[in-house]
Length: 346
Image (cartoon, rainbow, N blue to C red):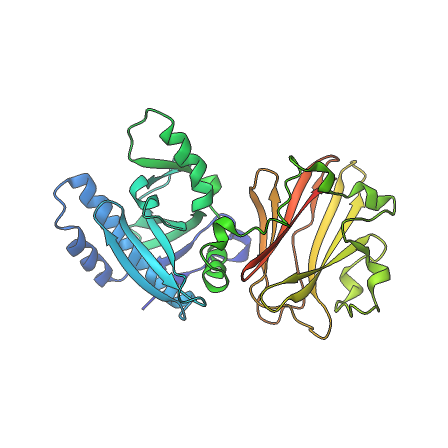
């Protein structure tokens, strides 16, 4: 039995999703940690055993089609091998357990990262409340700078110190990775022809201030002109300003699925620019393919927003954001084996 405690949407940004533990989970954790003589290590092994049992219960409840295999390592602890749509390309997910988060940092065993794992799933275990809370997850890509910094220092600690700010606190994002991507996509997913870094290639970035003057470039088109053309753009104009929006048709996936990204830029009274981003189907398709990720990221690669298309979505959108002039940001779309990226300058 798995009982999930899901906070209301009003508190979702601060309260993690939790799983209630059953008596058999505590018995199993005691058996697994009993052979460890060091008291500190034994307690940590006990917490980790509770954590992975809670995580497995959560995965079985939220994603019953996933194939989950538990692996134990004498130094790294426990990790999961997860198979989904691409059965020959399993994910490895490290389980990090802590009893209480007070400092804003978590300790991740370096041996766990060296397995290697594609993700570390961080949990908080409360033996008093008898529950496991899922704090969030972090990708191997985001851990690499922390690993390199530790290797260049003289610190002998066997743990990597992870700031909680690096965690993606939305567990549904992790489930989407399992269902719709291959592990390699999380570290080397960018196609060379579409990977543009404005710091190295400023001339290739799309300048949005030009749009306010009526000029478009880099394959973008005026939305009003694109409607009722051969593209057969499928969208409801109730949510889109035709005069202030630009559109680009993008092909993704093995079947070259064509989607339309619509980007609107509006000048605000505070001299900032408000940007809105939507994704729509095209042609005779009135729904977007399930499993496309739309991401907003900074020039340093930090994920600022991510949305995924789900079953029967006729469009998805990022939360509108405001930025001052000359700020650079990036947008990406990922679907199966293909990632599209573009850099923008306000």
